[in-house]
Length: 117
Length: 112
Image (cartoon, rainbow over all chains, first blue to last red; front, side, top):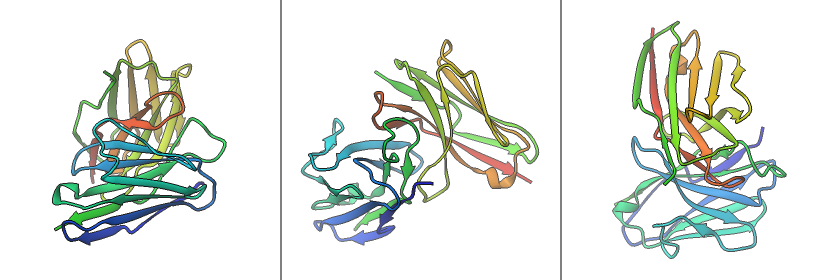
């Protein structure tokens, strides 16, 4: 099946620094990837839709200048949390559909646990 | 506004019994509904997809029903095992062909 790899799995940073999380589709091309955020014991919340070669589409309430998304190629999307603060500490998960599939199941990365001190 | 509700936050059952999880939705007309499993600290894993014209779908010990009149899906795990302990999420397309929106999930604990 389709594999999505996410890196790093855990990151601890100081307040005010920026952190980049990478999401790669290993065995398929993904023109669209989705970024989610999950707080403890809460559901996944969609942050943005990442489109290859164009700007990301952000959900209401998500600051696009704070959460920079770049979809540089058909297999790589990155999320950069800029000037991170403790309230940005969360579990960030990316996902994609297999190429040629506009609907149906999503394949998820393993997630990245961000802790901002 | 669109809403997905998984009424039980937690469900505890004995090994061998059937677990039944509920997903209700409002202000949606989904073409299909999906169920995922999430283990602690991991990304969700796809389990089953059921289309609006399908009343029931099965995969090994899993069974999903979809009632578009009641706006409800039921997810069953038969002959449950401790290894089935996880959080189960129900999901719908935000809009056709876009991202999925998830319910809060039900955490299932199967004791031996």
